[in-house]
Image (tube, rainbow, N blue to C red; front, top):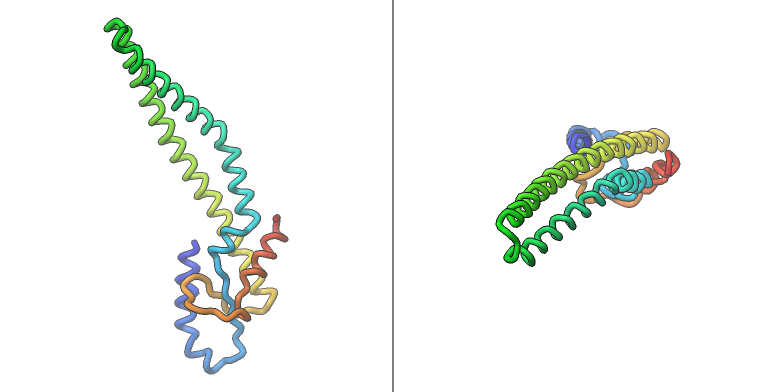
Length: 170
């Protein structure tokens, strides 16, 4: 979504550049979308929400890792003195727990990445909405984002957009 906005802004700047010399009354602004995505209060809330949502599964994984380590230690420590069948049973149990751990870790990573992407999408839409509101309220004709080599402080509206994001639910 951000890349689409960036490409649109870049193409708009190229298309409107000849007009700028003819129409000096066009008001242009710049926002640093990376700063907005990092510093928006909604970003911190999303992070806390994800931590809360996944903390119990993370704890389960930690316990399972500990069980695997305990089985490995027991096998290394007592494997030599165990009967063949006991050692074989312990190895099977260890292998089963290792497979279970790997499967659960993979599922955890997949689910976490999916949820992070969902939350990032929501945040990007909210940031875009805030940019549009600030641009409209302040009379900007064009707002550029990433890919800008230089912008004067007078066209920088990132702080205004951050303020708007805080008003929207900070």
